[in-house]
Image 1 (cartoon, rainbow, N blue to C red):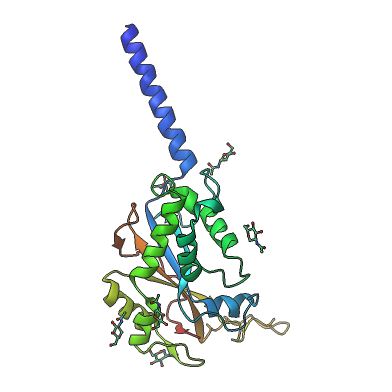
Image 2 (image 1 turned 120 degrees about the vertical axis):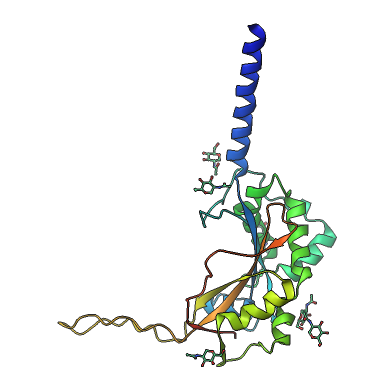
Amino acid sequence: MAMLISSLSFLVLAFAFFFCHVMSSGSYDYFQFVQQWPPTNCIVRTKCSKPRPLQIFTIHGLWPSNYSNPKKPSNCNGSKFEDRKVYPQLRKDLKKSWPDVESGNDTRFWEGEWNKHGRCSEQTLNQMQYFERSHAMWTSFNITEILKNASIVPHPTQTWTYSDIVSPIKTATKRTPLLRCKPDPAQPKNQRPQPKGQRPQPNSPPQSQLLHEVVFCYEFNALKQIDCNRTPGCINQVNISFQ
Ligand SMILES: *[C@@H]1O[C@H](CO)[C@@H](O)[C@H](O)[C@H]1NC(C)=O
Ligand SMILES: *[C@@H]1O[C@H](CO)[C@@H](O)[C@H](O)[C@H]1NC(C)=O
Ligand SMILES: *[C@@H]1O[C@H](CO)[C@@H](O)[C@H](O)[C@H]1NC(C)=O
Ligand SMILES: *[C@@H]1O[C@H](CO)[C@@H](O)[C@H](O)[C@H]1NC(C)=O
Ligand SMILES: *[C@@H]1O[C@H](CO)[C@@H](O)[C@H](O)[C@H]1NC(C)=O
Ligand SMILES: *[C@@H]1O[C@H](CO)[C@@H](O)[C@H](O)[C@H]1NC(C)=O
């Protein structure tokens, strides 16, 4: 009997520990590796330290993600960012692949991404591994070059369809990526108030949107790239401009 009680209490304890671990470290299904086109950040936010920033895709973040809950997990209870864990060679690498194009404080950008996202997958990748893996992902395919080879280069007026841009990336990586876009602030909003007594007109869709991010998806261990199957972050049927 004593034996049964002690093994039962062991089970209960083990379960409690497991549960606490899952709650505090966050749980996720897969990773989204998000790369951004810096000029779009600067068009949209008008906060950049340089007017015409880098013309290459750079890292925004590596996000442990949940298939059914797009905003989760985030801000988990793992270890806080520690700058000393970014050893000199890693820092040199990240300065290339993961710069902060808006304020110029790279460390603050890395700190924010680790604290918001990286900590939620700390059971899989510790802080050092998180940044090393992200840099390796960035190195594995050069999106800027893939698009350039498909004649998709920054242009002030030309536009492309969603699949025009996705196709060459899919061919090169053999996996389906996702695109994310931003509304183009240069386009008329078409949301002026209607004259009194008139029924509001349906807003006409914008003529184009700005390409902002390309997302690669990775399985739970962040080793193998997989097809992304989340809804694209661009307005359907609206052409995309790349500036
Ligand atoms: C994903 O989110 C849903 C809804 O919030 C939750 O029930 C589920 O446990 C989460 N999945 C994982 C793997 O964390
Ligand atoms: C983190 O821990 C704090 C205090 O223990 C708790 O209030 C909070 O809900 C936890 N957050 C998450 C995401 O688990
Ligand atoms: C950059 O951000 C880091 C981390 O938040 C902070 O410790 C540091 O003081 C900042 N550097 C400058 C020059 O603002
Ligand atoms: C990626 O390709 C672009 C365009 O060809 C080039 O400018 C850039 O140097 C390449 N980046 C790396 C890390 O090879
Ligand atoms: C782009 O084209 C160049 C020249 O044909 C080729 O050497 C390079 O491997 C191509 N890069 C990609 C990423 O397809
Ligand atoms: C969208 O882009 C395609 C090129 O891929 C072009 O043929 C088409 O005319 C564009 N549509 C609009 C509404 O600009």
